[in-house]
Length: 115
Length: 114
Image 1: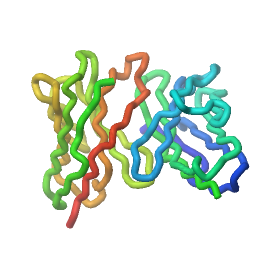
Image 2: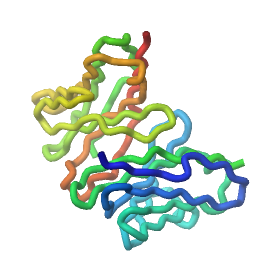
Image 3: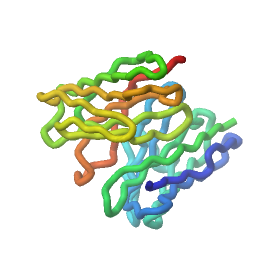
């Protein structure tokens, strides 16, 4: 079946540094990818919609300058958390929408811990 | 998206059927019922979806009431590995232009015990 891979699975960084998380569709092309954030014991919250070759669309309350999203190809979207702070510690999950099938597949998630 | 209501938590004995209810009284005619689950520290996993007819696959069965205002996800023989948070989401189907932007509620925490 279709697979979406995220890298890294987990990352620990110091406050003030930037962290990049990759989301790859391994065996299909994805015109649209979605980025979610999940705090402990809470549900997933959509952060932004990433379309290949265009600017991402951010949900209300999500700072676009802090969470940089790049979707340069049909198989890769990246989320960069800039100047990370402890409150950015969270589980970040991407999903990808197949270009042909229109079906939706989730990545395994990336856990960010900011010290 | 139509709002869904699910019980906060449920318990089930291993080997028994787990029946997870979901209310979606404001569902629109073109909206599907989707079920996902999330095992701890993993991404959501698709389970099943349906429009108005009952559906069955290798993982589960989905029973949708005739008025489509509620549905039940059935795991016929629950195992310990089925312990997870189960999300019922109402969305337009794969062909819909806004498909993919999922609104997750709090879901139901299903605990399967020996």
